[in-house]
Length: 379
Image 1 (cartoon, rainbow, N blue to C red):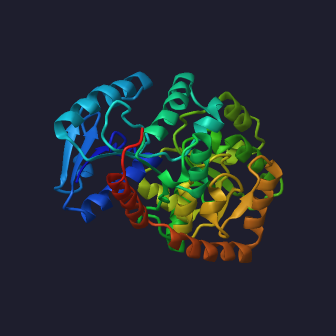
Image 2: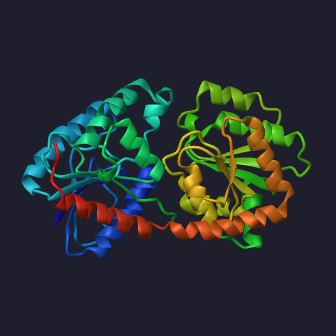
Image 3: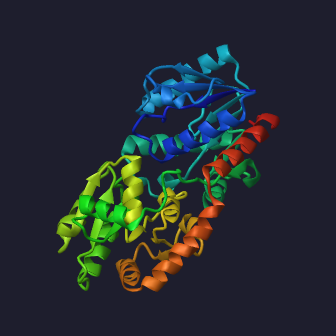
C-alpha cells in the first residue's frame, strides 16, 4: 500500500498532544510495516528526525497552513493536486482534517469535540472553521479513529455517525516517564519549587483546563497547610484569559504558585515524577495523556469525574467534581495527609497503566487503516 500522511504537526521541540500522538504512532507503524510506502506531507521545512525509516518519502507543500483560510488552500488545493500525481491508496490525518475534494480513501483521527461543547473557549475564526468543517470531515472519512470510548460515543451522537465506523485507539505515554529515586526528586524540588513538595499541573494554560477552579482550590487548601506546599504549573500561556488572570491575581497564596513555562520532555518527566500529585481537573478531555504519564511516574492523580477522564484513570485516581472548588481542595488535603491512601493510589496506577502503551495505540491505528483500505468509500 501507498499511504499518504498529514504530518503538519511534527514540529521539532513543539510536539503538543496531537503532534505527540503522530510522532509515537508513525514511528512504530512505519518500522513495523517496511513493505508499505509512506508519503509524509509537511507544510514547511521538516526536521529529519521525523523521517524514521527508509520507506518514508517526505514532501513539503505550501502554503504553510496555520490559519483556517490557509487550511483550505492546503487540504483542498495542494493535497489533492499531489494525490493525483502520487496516487496513494489511503490518506491518514492524525488531526482529523481531511481533504473534502479528493476521492482518496481517508482516515481521520478526531481526538475530541471540545469545540462543539465549549465554543466560547476558541477564537471566533477557529471556532467557525471547526464547527463547519468537522461534521463534513466525519462524514467524508472512510473510517474515524478516536482516543476514548467517551469520544467515540460523542462523535457518533453529535455528528450522527454510525459507531461501527469509529475505532478507539487509546493514547500511550513516552518511555521517558518513569519513577525517580529520592535524591533526584530532591534536586528537582530544589530547582523548581524552592525545595518544597508541590502539586503539579501540565498543559497549555487554556480555559478548558479549568485553571480558575484549580487556583481557587489550591488557595482554599493553603488555608490549612502547614507544610509549605506549592503548585507548579508547566505549559505555555497560550490562552491566558481575563478570567484566569483574575482568579490568579486574587489568590491569597499566589506566591506559592510557580510557572515554569514550556518545558522539555526530560524536565516534564522529572517534574511529574517528583510531584506530590498531578492535579488535572479539566472540564473536558478526549483522553488526558498527563494522567497516564503520572501513572508511569508512580505519581498519584487528582482528576475530574467527567468526560473521558474516569475511563483513563479507572480506579487509580482521586476523582473530583471539576466545578466544585471544595471537592478539589478536599482531595489535595487527603493526598497530603494520608500517605497510606497515597501509596494505594500509586499501586493502582501501576495496574492501570498496563492497559495503555504507544505500541498498542499504533497496532490499533494500523488495524483501523487496514479496515479503511478494505472498506468502500461512502458518500
